[in-house]
Amino acid sequence: MDEKQSQQASDEERHKRKMAKQKANVDHGINAAQEERGVLILLTGDGKGKSSSAFGMVMRSLGYGYKVGIVQFIKGVQLSGEEIFIREQHPEIELYQMGTGFTWDTQDKAGDIAAAETTWAVAERMLADASLHLVVLDELTYMLGFKYLDENRVLEALCHRPPEQSVVITGRGGGSALQALADTVAEIKDVKHAYKNGIKARPGVDV
Image (cartoon, rainbow, N blue to C red):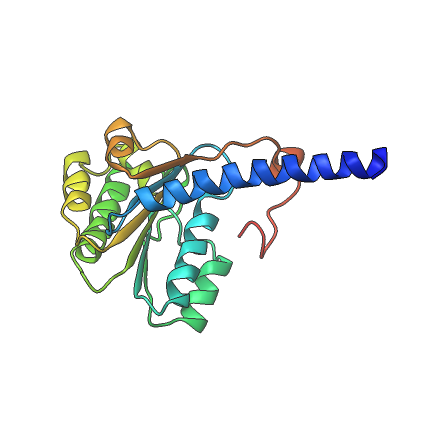
């Protein structure tokens, strides 16, 4: 065996040891996670992709034939690709939108609070429905941040949902109590964003 072949064999052996160690760590994690129940996921942060990630989980659930419920706070005035796809291709999904748009556009606090409470009543019903495998509460965190909804009421409904039901909450912030309750919290950070460089939101990518 020449020097080059010897070096290749040595590199291959190191790679095998590294991958074996990594596999052992992965296997250990899989074996340690034995509890079967739904999870509460909070997708927060200033970056793009929180709602997109949530709708990715909707597609996963549909792939397994599970029932899904979606409630969108804030959104509902501007048409989105997700809404078009669900209403045209998956009418069996209940999609409820608050439909008032962004609260900084409406500038109507009393009206926004009333709309938020009406919308939350729909969310509460979904959170009590054991037939729903996944419930998405899109942009809910803003309702807590603006104090349009009672935080304790929201947390109580999340705590007492059916044990097999998973919930995904999106939006910036959300508060420490919601983060503490969540099983998974992911913070999405902007590194660059096309919009800040004057590029318009693009159908099929941004909306």
